[in-house]
Image (cartoon, rainbow, N blue to C red; front, side, top):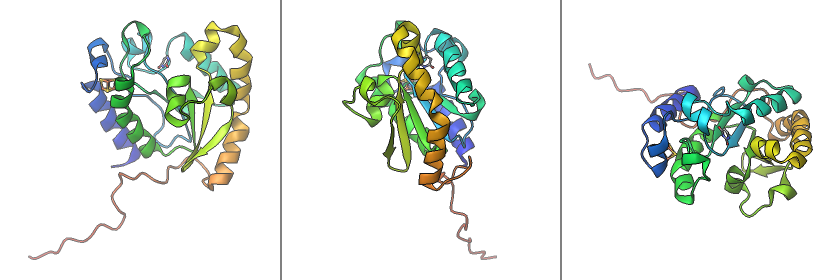
Length: 214
Ligand code: URA
Ligand code: SF4
């Protein structure tokens, strides 16, 4: 399966998933969106009201702010992949619970494996906890850390920065550094350009030939 096909397959699965209680409050699942060969994946928390209505990530106020931050970094929304740690809306926008995060993680893991991004940017503490358990976001935000085959940068959640004016300069400064960090990631990973190189779901190029007995 190509990365694109894998992403489509995952979207189909989450649309009908019942692996955790959040399916009860789902109108539309929000699998995430963006190119299957994106160099950067943004991972937020979970769908809110508008995302649940539209089945798309970050389309409310936080999303508008995210668009501005991306523009500031010279990026368009369509250049990057944007998704969440849970694909269905927690009722009343409550925090996702541990068992919901654990249940939904299999989808995110498959998405990361298919896209194979150079940089994962965690937005807020739930996605940060996946890579930096116990870290304090106020201490680590904006720092690029190597995690296996890629880099991870924790950033404040755009919604948090909208509600807490003191966080706004910090998230803006972190986004402003992004072009430079992407260059560094490309160099150090020796992976240039957008093409995804390890779509592990793809069959081997040389398929074993079937013996033709007839
Ligand atoms: N906040 C999130 O964390 N994710 C969304 O998709 C929208 C708002
Ligand atoms: Fe399934 Fe994730 Fe939705 Fe829970 S949040 S029902 S695990 S897709």
